[in-house]
Image (tube, rainbow, N blue to C red; front, top):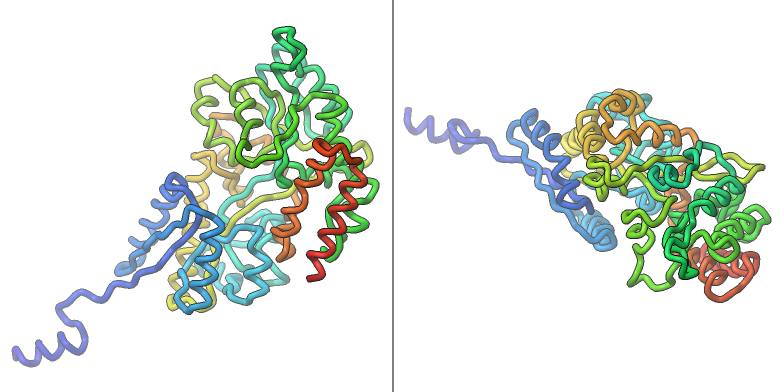
Length: 421
């Protein structure tokens, strides 16, 4: 009898715990962001006895990307990883991602409930290569207190470049009479993500429709007009401080905004967690408005998003897809809304949140979604190289004194060379 029991235990595990299955999860998120995912992870583990999730974040995003690629190629991939919109083309073209569409309904993800222009970032044809977890359009934040002090009405969505300039002029002030503004109307920021929407809202672009050429798009009259509008804010209208060309001192615009010395700042929803205490206490009183547009153009803004993806060569396909769904599900998105990190990718979740939004900003953010377009980074694999050329346009105009047309044309030629390599 004892021999029979012993044999059963050896061969089948009778009387012993079943072996544990470990799912590996990775992202570039901060500790605070990872903490937001813990409830979803714990709920997933509770629903799958014998399964444990190991979160292995990598704080440096460039290092993170390299680590994920290397692990997939070497046959030891994470089971689920966070995919940034700018990495979608490279991962899709490498054919290393599992198409999640066939599994979506089985794991509780109704793709029809997701904003179509957000889902499009992670889709190719009928295939969906990641479950979106959150996103943000680009907007202008404005300091309500500075508007109130100047007796100005708050800006409204769809405002024009001319209205923007007039507002920024009224809010640029030399308070101590030394001939230098102490309060600025706005800021012109070097990184391209901060001014891509200005080009689109002027009817311009950086690449042609095929994404294979910059010449004819980046140096088009519409794009040059948008660059002129931006750089004139510094050189002609003098309503923005001169952007510093050195990365070591970036962030000056944000510091001015946080301290109440800058009225209009281009940014995304990711700004809110940094200033939530000031907003909650009333030390900062902010509003959100659309990107200004040229009179002849429509408002357009990029949608920056991330999503949970599953490598094709995971050893735990079914469990990995279920974990990705849990991390992108409604409960997980509500947690990120409460933290102010990003917008929900599901309109119904976003709408249900609005009465609970104590900061009162998400309704204005939500109104921008109809203007949203997947950014170029989500469409072409070489965009990091392309993007690196674009801040040079502002430097060429603001520091070297070149014309916007000359600066745009030179950048277009460099980008054309990158795209044909």
